Each structure stands twice: as C-alpha cells, then as structure tokens.
Figure 1 (tube, rainbow, N blue to C red):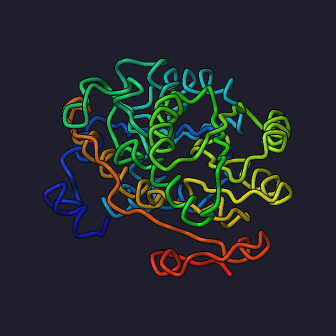
Figure 2 (figure 1 turned 120 degrees about the vertical axis):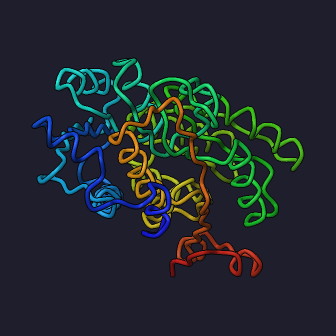
Length: 328
C-alpha cells in the first residue's frame, strides 16, 4: 500500500494523531507484542516492511512506540508460552502472522486486540466471525482471497507438467487451514483428472518419511501447502524435491528462491505493510471487532527456470509470459 493510501485510511493528521497525544498525556508509550513462529533471521524484509508501514503512519520504534518481540524458532509448542508472556507484559496490541501464531495469541487473550498477518481463511478456521465484521479481538489482513488459491496452484502445476497423473500434497495437520485446503484441492483434482496422494508432516523430522512415500507411490509432482513451518524449512524441502526429481509448487516466492520450481500466492511484503494501518487505527481507539479484514490485492507467479531445466521441463511460453518473476 502506498503512502497516500495510508493517509487516506486514517484521514490525515499523521504528524500528531489523537492517539499519540492521549498516550503521551497519560505518560505511557504504546507497546506492541510481535509474535512469530519462525526466527528473526527468517525473511527479515517482512519485519522491515511492517516497521516501515508504522513509520509512514508516524510510529517510530524507540520513540513513541515499543515493540516486544517473541520468536518461537520454528517450534509450535513454544507459541502458547510466548503468547502468554506478551499478555503478562500487558501489551496494547499483539501482531502475529500465520494461523498457528494468531491462534496461540487468541487462546492467550480475549481482550487484547490482535492484528493478524497472512492468515488463510480466518473465517473457516474460526478466528473471526466474518470478514466484514470480525466480531472479537482479532482483525487484520487475510492471507487468501479464498480457498480457490490452492486450486490455482494445482492448475499451474498441471499446466507446467501436462502429462502428470499423480500429485503429492504435503500438509501440516497442526495447521487448521490445511484441512479446508485439502477439501478444495480434492475438488480441483477431480475436475483436472489427476490423482492425489495426501501426506502430512508436522516438522522437518517427518519430511524424509513423506518423500519416501511419494517415491513409493510414484508421485509425478508435489504441491506444498503454505505453512510457516514449511516456509521456515523451505531450503530443505526444495532440496528433497530436487533430489526426488519432483516438480514442486509452493505458496510463497521464497521457496522458489530456495530452489523450488514455482510459486503462486499473495505478496507477504504487502501484507506486512498493510498490517501497520490496523495497529495505527487500534491505537487511535478503533475496536478490532469493527475493523473489516482486508483480503489480498496482489498475487505473484514466480517460476524458477533453472530448476525447470534441471528437471528436464520446458515451461509453457504462456506461463512464462504470465510470470511476475523468472529466476534463471
């Protein structure tokens, strides 16, 4: 979102918003709790985009706002305790990305506002009542314009590998969104005439077993459902797919940069920038229950031509023309 769009959202007065004056008069600097499943070193441009979004709205870390960071280092079991720590710190808002992180925050508090980033199908996973009126203490930016995005990922994969007959789907049973996505991709598979092999992995210790099962059943390609654990270990997954000679599609561009074949999904940089507007509105007195959840407006198709060549694939010219970025 551009600067002028942020300004329009808040009606101007960025230099000295009422919320800032109220906080200063009370002698209190707002505290933001930032909760993430991965680590500080995982995709640092995302956090930079969030900070930049805040800065454009007049919030400068260390001056008129404090951010308390909690990273789970890829361990799902740590999220509940980290969320509880932020609640004990009495932060004013919790910002978290992904279904697991936002779920942990919501389980930890029913009163502190939570700004979600990139949660796919927050209604279906029970985090909010509706996009127009979230209803509780959670609002923010949804990670999907609908479950049809996984059908589109499967479609792009079958267009790239036209003779494919069996596609492995890797999901994380700890991600509530994946249960919904699998139902959608099953419908898409029936219409496209491919068979699916459904496989699960909760973490990297289960990756080898999943790929062994793909080899045993002679899967011809792989679709990795978007998940913060999978994104965190994207290089390992891309390496396993390459060694197994499996064309693989993902939901985030970083997996393609790590060696994967292709990705299709919304821009997470855009998510993080746009989430700052929710923080700004809530600090000025808005209730999260009344702030409509935004859906993605920017989608990216990224193709790794180097990976395609290594797999002996010729990417259709039409897909190359449609790609937002080609990695060579």
